[in-house]
Image (cartoon, rainbow, N blue to C red; front, side):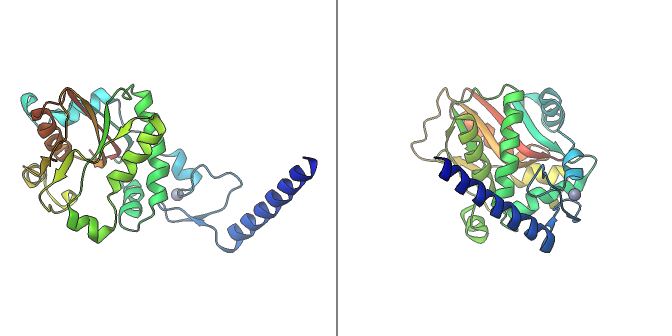
Length: 245
Ligand SMILES: [Zn+2]
């Protein structure tokens, strides 16, 4: 036993030694401010402590829903509650979190921030859903990128909160251009009739929490929510890592 502890301590010592050596040779690079940093205690594996401390958490969930409601008439809004982790309002550079995750394929960034989003979901008392449903991407986009970012976020949340992950409900039948390049009205038009329900998906009387990377006007999420409600879902909520408003 004592020998094992000594062996463990020795391994830890060597690990720490190599980690500090690695920090010295190749210090971590903050994906938000792009500066190199070197600390004893890193609050995040990907952003420096200063950028971490300056994270602008998204506004209260009631206010987020109000923002979404500004883009749709009340009877055309199918989302009953919505939450998000980080607001991009004062610092657009935090968009790099999703950019690096999606386009540079740093999937562990997505996992780190999805764990934080899980905490936000608990804070907002939104863990009472039957299914966690990722917003699907078109199969051609999946082939280009190799993965769907929303799947990774949803899977992480499902593990953290012990909720059922369901990627067998929604289907994307249209290849849409990136929402970020479009105006508000173009965004709403761009995602009209984009989603279908997969065969045999039984969502009658079920509550579903939709997961996406970024919430902007809410048009993508609302479109998905509309079809889910039409097929009998009792309630549809939404959660995203970033909130651009
Ligand atoms: Zn930074």
